[in-house]
View 1 (cartoon, rainbow, N blue to C red):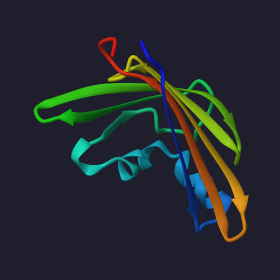
View 2 (cartoon, rainbow, N blue to C red; view 1 turned 90 degrees about the vertical axis):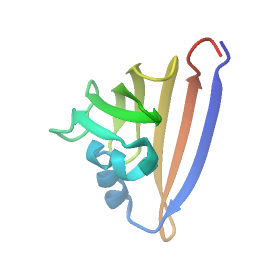
View 3 (tube, rainbow, N blue to C red; view 1 turned 90 degrees about the horizontal axis):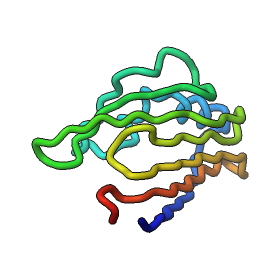
Length: 121
C-alpha cells in the first residue's frame, strides 16, 4: 500500500497562546471540518490535550454512510506541537503532526499528514 503525504501551512493573525488553546480543544474539530462531513465528537474532550488521550468522533464521508473515527494523541509539547494517530477509522493509516510557531503578526500553523487509503489503494 502506498503511503501518501499532505502538508500545509497557514498564517494565523492570533497569538500562539490563542492558537494553541483553540487547536488543542477537540470540541473545535467540527469547526475545522467541512460541514458536509457532519462531524460529531463523541468523547475524549473532557480535559485538555495530553499524551494517551483518545478522541472518538463520527463523520459522514458519503451520503447515507456514517463511520466512527478514533484518534490517539501520542505526543504533546505545549505551544509547539502535538501528534494524533488513527486507532480506528476510514484510513488504513493516519499519522498527523500539528506544529505551531510564533511569527511576526501571529502564528504559523503547519500540518504534516501521512496516510494510506483503505482497501489496499
